[in-house]
Length: 334
Image (spheres, helix red, strand yellow):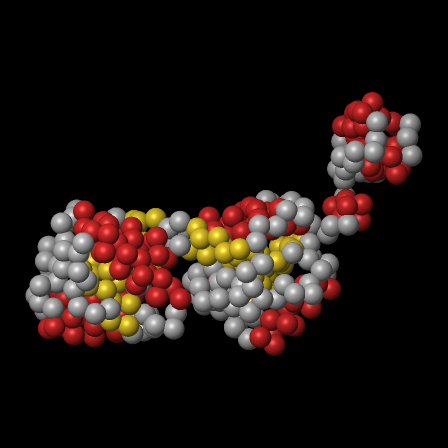
């Protein structure tokens, strides 16, 4: 035996069974007597037999490959989701094929055809925002799970951050600090994430019987908008003592402009961002308290549900995954 890997023929021969029976026993099939299975497994162990992934796939009808189709060419939200998914698939257990459609529907169809031609067992589709996206599941021969951006088909399986709950965490933290003049600056109104975060803020303030300071200021996801909105807000609402921002970029811009106008953060105004984009949130002075979307956990959960769907146990609907608050110096001087 030395010098070459043991084959399934060797295992079958040593166990005194046919190759078909050895294959069934090694794949845990039920139609093999327990005593036969034990004999085959003992032979496999004695010969240090490693089943070939391709052979396993042919027996089970699975190739043990999955496709990850992303539209997020920037990668800021997509990459953590993909990392979490890959971790769940396990090193050496599943091959992962990544395709970036860059938000282009024609490119997406091309990648879908390419992945299916490679006989992937399933697909994870990662959105570029939390806005619902067109379903690709119809007429596909394999299960699909959507992550970050939900499918517009309620029969599909989708995992998204709970932005309403994330905003509530932020506002409850500000209220617990004794802040009552709480304003909101956020991104474009056509973004589901911006609307959900504004809704969470409204719910938390209503539950506490506190009125929002001024109107919600809708703009872009940028530091420039954070600076511009700060100037408008501080002129219109001088009593503001806290601002919940819809992104870390907006929060960083706000902090900069507030400082220029002689307001200290967090002394005069507590500031909370969103996304926990650490390039910004940890580098801003003061470092930003922010809401973390737990995207790696979201990706890992999406992958686990893809496994379940491959096994015929799909979990349809939009599943909202909890966010967490990361407290830093912009709300609590350290």
